[in-house]
Length: 166
Length: 184
Image (cartoon, rainbow over all chains, first blue to last red; front, side, top):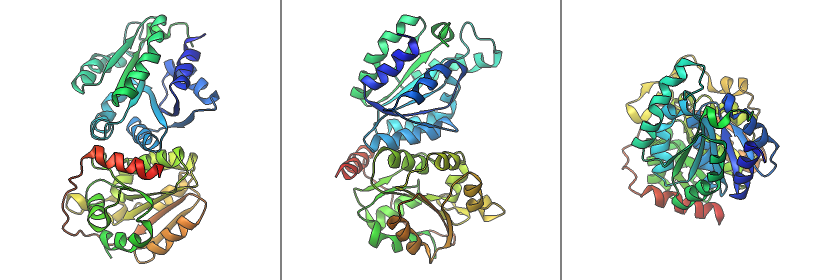
């Protein structure tokens, strides 16, 4: 099974029925698969904090939700993560394209990469870093952990993880 | 009429409805006037009430009323194309447009100058956009509840606030009782 198929399968297995996203090149394949999955409502966002609002609403409406975005979004989502997701104690898996790591062609992406883990750490958000293809096997457990704990959880997926996938 | 006057006119027919209220005074006024488990008070994320309401409307079948404000929609302008392109027939967005940032001292917003939210909403692709006066608002909202299509309402009212206490409910309690109201 491809990495993209496995991610979708884990979403479906964990009954995620609402996904919002802001695209990233590394996430193109998984976003295509999301659109093909009939059990998931996919509502693209214009900005990631908007997406966190959509997920909060879907969660309260009884649907498990998740957001797919780039690590540059951490900057624009801090207030929403803290005063909505964490304050009201809601689960939110965040599948994050971790740009700016080894293999990155765009220098500007490195500037946010160096802050990504520090910011997530400061926010007390459980953070997992997928670097090798087989790291995807941890996703099912991470999703279960997220819904058990009712917290936002970050899954950082770097260029090595996506190498050869899309 | 100021915002709290408009909210008072809605209470007779929204008490048992799912209502998402905007940060600051709109939530505090709704809490003072008609605190209900079916109210979700958004206490911290200016701009996101319309997004929370849309996610809620897309996830379940009950009607959802969002009480938003002009300053908040201006802050999260990206919400309007998302709403237009993901229409939910059970979604009513009421933007109380008093042309000012009421919760922070009535500083003027751009809708109090040259910007028209109804024209922006239509340009974003929203199909059922109604601009009305404060006095007309209750009738328009009531009709939207009776209708089976998404409605965006811009209620033009006067700027002004009433003294209100802060909301002391624990946020997890607000969420829990709201989710029970959704499921009831």
